[in-house]
Image (tube, helix red, strand yellow):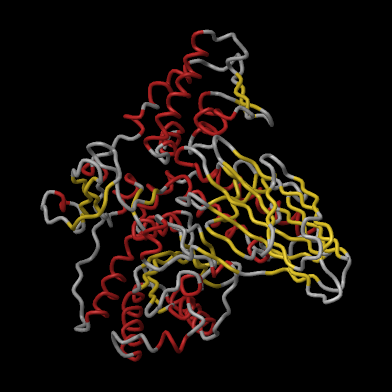
Amino acid sequence: MSNLQQVLSMLKQNTKEHYKEVERLLEKVINNILKDPKNVKLRTLKKSNVTVSQKILKSPGGVECLKLMGFQESDSDFTLPLHAPLQHLELIKENISVENVFKETPVEKVLHKVELPKFSSKYTNKFLQEVEHRFHLARIHDDVALQDQAKELICEAGIEAKAIQSMRSIQKNVLAGDLEDPNISMQEVLLSELLAWFKNDFFSWVDSPKCEKCDSPTKFSHMSTDSELLKYTDRVEIHNCTVCNASTPFARFNDLNILLATRKGRCGEWANTFTLFCRAMGWEARHVYDETDHVWTEVYSVAQKRWLHCDSCEAALDTPLMYESGWNKKLSYIIAYSGEDLQDVTWRYSSRHKEVLSRRKKCTEIELVSAICSLRNERQKGLSETRREYLNKRVLCELIEMMVEKEATEKDKKGRTSGSMAWRLSRGETKRDFEGKIWKISDTNIFSLKYCTSLDQYLVNNEKIKNFSDGVFKMNGVFRKEEKDWRNAYLCREETVSVGSITWAFQVDFDQKSIDEIIIYFDYTTYEDGNVTVSLKNENKRVDFIKGQKELKTFDFSNSKYIEITATLTGGSGSVYWQHAQLFRQSLDSEKFPFTVEIKLK
């Protein structure tokens, strides 16, 4: 794929409405330079310029588009050298129109039929028939032509560069004593970067498509029975416009050739395509199907000699208990499929094995084990004896691993983030509210808490505590975001959350003492019309930070034993409004503390 095609592909990840403004600004930059090509000022775009930063640099494909024009990046700006050929600007101008970027590739032009062997199930049990059918379809990910097609779409050089940068950062923090050695391999770092790229730059989530007639939101109505619409898939949803009531079809494709072109859908399309990408990277990967309606990928870690859970919809790596602990799923059957193997992996995804076992009623356990062994042995007949022996040993190790019930970590307890909040709440797969830590202050005259966003770490009276959520009392729709390209980290709202809030709580747990003075440094950043309000309160009193204020010293809570610090995030503009109110933004290389609390007792 050419560089231009890659850039156009990235630009398509913007919403159509947002991209219209991106196109306008890019064309303005190009036209200004073409009219006065020797004007150095017109050839320089300052990163500090809010319009440039928010509308171009932070939009998918924006930076890549500038670099394709010939712009060179420095710490403070993007500059087009005087010797850069103007033909590049003209080429970009010819191709970045909204109509060109968002044009749909006709399905007929992307079909590359992969002929799988004919399928006829040998089982009478409906569930076992489905297992056999999915195992049959899993062969599709081994198709070399499809893998080559996927490989051309992967921004491999960029992913590798970020992986190397991440590995160096990990090593630096380990050497400094700020991070326990995670014993992570380059394959795993690459996998993490591939997940981030796939979610943020390549594939798009669709709850309901925009109206084809007026571009307004739509709402699901029914499944289509139109034979013309069902030409390339057996499932097409019809969504009705909430404004003009026109109908818009949304096809749920399984064909990977089509998905590589459309690049949109829900978890089925995401997992199907991401599994192919992992195979294209040369990794052993499995397509994992959960009977409670979700799909994801597993990739085999050569270094750890075990399968890693990978959810491309969430960009989640190795957090297998999140569905049970974070999404509140009542799991039953989870089966992993590849071209040469299948496995019941339910037990990897649960810490409540007996509870899960009580829900498995689609067939007997003996019938399921027998079917899996039979299907696996039949598929592996054509493999070499060495390969079969290797696979058998790997299966044995996996079965032993899954016998142990593991405890959920904080990462496992996070609710679902893919899909709109309303859609997630309707499925019971996310938690709008969170309640946790109250910092207890005892046997000290001065309590000190500091938080470093880049390390995601608290320093509490010289004790290091990882993960910002571990120190939070209440949280509504706020998460920690890393901008890998810009090397920044901050707390902000989740997408679709209009009002986010986060609260830290402190309690004096010492009879002879109470609060005297409170000293707070609370850094935040806003863009466009984003807004952050900060307040201190307890049951008797409330003190608000003045707008723009980031430091506060107060005796107003003197003699109290309890205090809460709450930040509320609102406002913002456009499709990334949720990023326009940020807490504790700092460089990933920084080790400063943008949030500090000092409580003096008396």
